[in-house]
Image 1 (cartoon, rainbow, N blue to C red):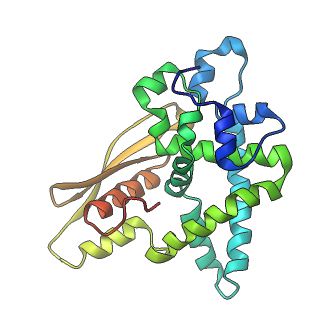
Image 2: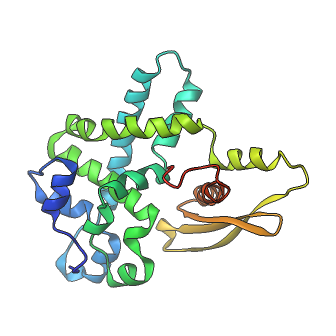
Length: 239
C-alpha cells in the first residue's frame, strides 16, 4: 500500500455505511494496476464489481426518473438517464467523497498515470462501490446512498437540459456562420479491453478544449465540455 491511501474506515464514515464484508470494499478500491504488480497476493481488482455496479446504477436511476417524470416519454427519460449515469457525473460524485484517495494503484498508474485524478478510473470505482454495497446488504442500501445524490445532480442536468455537450457547443458556434468547429483525435492508450481515447476540439485553428474517455464519443464529449467551460457557457463543476 502507499502512504497516500487513506484508511477505509474514513471512507465508510463519508458514505454513511459500514460494510459487514470488508473484503467487498477492499475489492471495490483495488485498481487492476495494483493487482498486476502484486500477482503473488492473489488479489481481485474492481472490474467485475464495476460491471455489476453499472447495472445497479442504471436500475435505480431508471426507477427514480420513471417516478419523477410520470408525463415524460421514453426519449426524455433515456436522455436524462444518460446524462445522470455518464462518466463526468459519476466522476463528480466520486470526487465528492475523494474516492480516488482511498484506492490502491500500481506504482506505474500512481506515479505516471495519476490514477486517482483520471475521471474514467474514479467513475468506474464509484460503480464498483455501488456494487459492493449492493452485495453487502441489498438494493435498498444503495438507493439510500445514491438517490439524494441523483436528485442533486438532476438539478444540474435540468438547468442545462438534456442536450449533450457537442450539440450545445455546435449550437453556440453556429451563431457565427464563418466559425468552423472540428474534433481531432490525439491518440489512445491502455490495453485493448480498457482503451482510453484522447480528443481535442478546435474553433478554426484555436484549441478550445481537450478530453479523454473510454470511447471516442466520450472523449469528444469531454473535450466539448471543457470547451464550454473555457467559453464561460458551463460551470466548472458541471458533470
